[in-house]
Image (tube, rainbow, N blue to C red; front, side):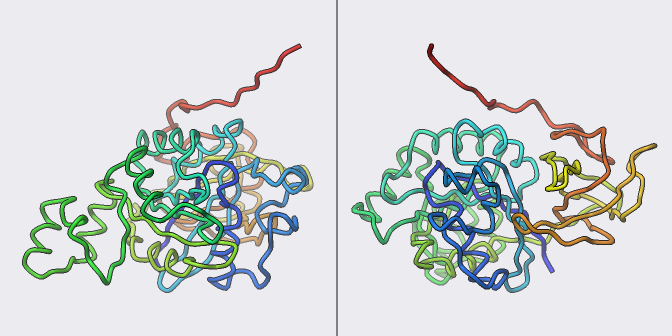
Amino acid sequence: MKKQTVGIVAHVDAGKTTCIEALLYKSGAIRKLGRVDHRDTIMDCDEQERNHGITIYAKEGHFDWKDTRFYLIDTPGHVDFSSAMERSLAVLDYAVLVINGQDGVQSHTETIWRCLAYYHIPVIVFINKMDISYLSKEQLLKDLQVKCSDVCLPFDKDHPTEELSLCSDALLEEYSKTGTFQQQTVQDVFYERRFFPVFFGSALKLEGIEELLNAMQYFSVQRNYPNEFGGKIYKVSLSEKGDRLVHVKLTGGTLKAKEKIIEEEKVDAIRIYQGGTFETMNEAEAGDVVALKGLTKFEAGQGLGFEQDAEKPLLSAFMTYEL
């Protein structure tokens, strides 16, 4: 089974948490569909998040769709917590950018877009809340093309478009000869960030969610990870009992519970999280996103094994006030 790490990013109030809830529900990972206004979504498990209706901390979820295991990272959408969003980008295969169909591209959306470009992260765009938007698809698409990229294009793998064929010579040649595209060619162009597929829907009404799931699976590729152990730390948190947790994506080899990372640093337990709940694992493999209990000397941004430490983040948390 392929493994993909996908970050869900958005300006605050775009419906990102609702979108994740819909993905988990539609894929069968959860049985009950929660709502942000009911304070019962699986991702907003912190009391402050439920009270304010925003995501403050990056969190993980996972689900299987067709031949792919997806690890989702729910990132904060509020500008004050954007540094936590940026730290998550280092472990992503690609991102899903959720846009509020009522507002189009907002100021922080453009900041996120520049950040994704800096780290060269491929992007699928999901324009949400179309059930209550007074803007047309054409208006929203034009806004996206002007403010983000002119190669943000509606995508349907079964109905190739001439606009997509102009994104690369390989696509143009295939389209000219056959009137269609090979999946691998489309994937290559996507991962080169030469086009950004766009989808429309309403996460609250589960509209467009299956199409988004199919697109996520379509753009997923089999990763060839090395046998040597490696991992990237993107977050450090405390459990409900005050245990220190190091959140990591394994980028090579395997890791077993009770195994030493370095001298005097042993992994007491390996956890896989679904929002606020978790299961323990005896062993994690390359491509898995897990939380390690027992490590005391590692911080966000550090590499494990053969991985180097990450660069200093572009964004930082800030607060302004007047007396």
